[in-house]
Amino acid sequence: MANELGYGFYSKHREALMTRLPDGLIFMRADGETIRNNDVSYLFRQSSDFLYLTGIEDPDFALLLDPKRGETTLFVPDVDEKQLVWRGYIPPPAEAARHFGIRRAYRISELSRVFPLLKRGYHRLYGNRRGIELLGRKLKQGLQARPEPLREALDELRAVKTPGEIQTLQHANDRSAVGHIAAMKCTRPGMFEYQVQAELEREFRKAGLRHEGYPSIVASGRNSAVLHYQSNRRQMKAGDLLLIDAGGEYRGYTADITRTFPVSRKFTRRQKDVYNIVLTAQKECIGRTRAGVTSAELHLHSLRVLGDGLKSLGLLKGNLDNLVESGAVATFYPHGLSHMLGLDVHDVSGGRRRKLRHMGKPMLRFNARLEPGFVVTMEPGLYFIEALIRSPERRQKYQGMVNFSLAEKYLDFGGIRIEDDVVVRPAGAPLDLTKVPKEVDDIEALR
Image 1 (tube, rainbow, N blue to C red):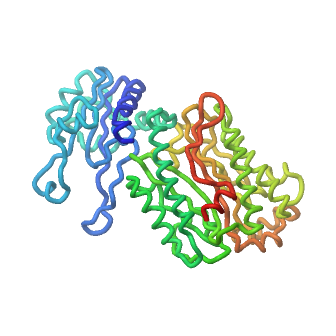
Image 2 (cartoon, one colour):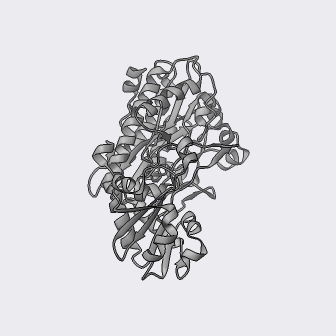
Image 3 (cartoon, helix red, strand yellow):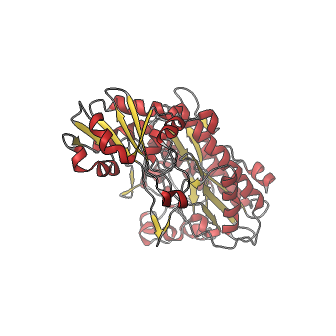
């Protein structure tokens, strides 16, 4: 995969950015390492914007884009004996330029000599914070430094994925799927959540996915109703559900996959009933994902399917429109259907974000008209959360709509979420990147 993609598609990202900001130099510095404790650093993960433009996963490089001349210049970190002893080999400029597909490169220490020559003819500088700080007052002299247009331009560009990005996201999904399937196969009553996490992430590492896109959620029993549970310490028992929300990163691009399955070999009747309601909502929303449709329309459809399913179980009562519009369904579905995905798990959306409100609280972090090249998650869920089911305010507001006495009998159930990553196409059905079994029969066959 790495050899097939190379670094060619990053040059297209740089060209697009220079087209967006043709009237100024663009200067960015990569992130540096962050101290974890004393003299130990966190495992380094590059800033998403720098990855988008270069694919460089190492710290402290710098990048200069010259839109008027269409030139790219790379600045490579300086090396000394101590760095070579403790960090190992850092390529010289010529080698780095060849490897990353950039025509010209220098050491960072040469910036004070090279930059004054390259800035001739410019009065504006678009830079990130670390880049502007690196240049300092003397090198910036004569340039108006403006970080905001760079942020806006990158958000717009990153929102619509290029073919190379979609290939990379597909690779991250394929390798993450192997981890999810391994987790499904290994889970047994008596295991701890962290033991399943170890099997899951072992497969990520074997596939070359060095980072997770976010901390893995491995949540059993009642923990599966905690939306961002991360403790992963509970010992699982027969009859539990296990919800795993996890994705590995490939070259910074992350998968975001959720599956819920029984810790025992098979779903119970009650688990299967709730699971199939969530699965129907997800499949219908994926089927409706088209360019021109809004994410709010898809979210509304998920509310209607889940609300109708909850009515069939006796957990909701009354007119479906009222149940949706009042927010009663959100008692069991307290989050949005989707978000953008890419170099960040909750990726930039190019200023296209809007808020939809229920009970005076935001329900959608992402509400936009879908465009070709968007990569979005589809992740409906149903949860039995004690704080919501026993809320006095909710009981008063939804009296006659929510069967709270029946809902209390589900408090040990936990929650179910099913999540795939899909690409919006110019026409027709979306491309589903996620290849992890989700039909009941397929899951039970793996169990």
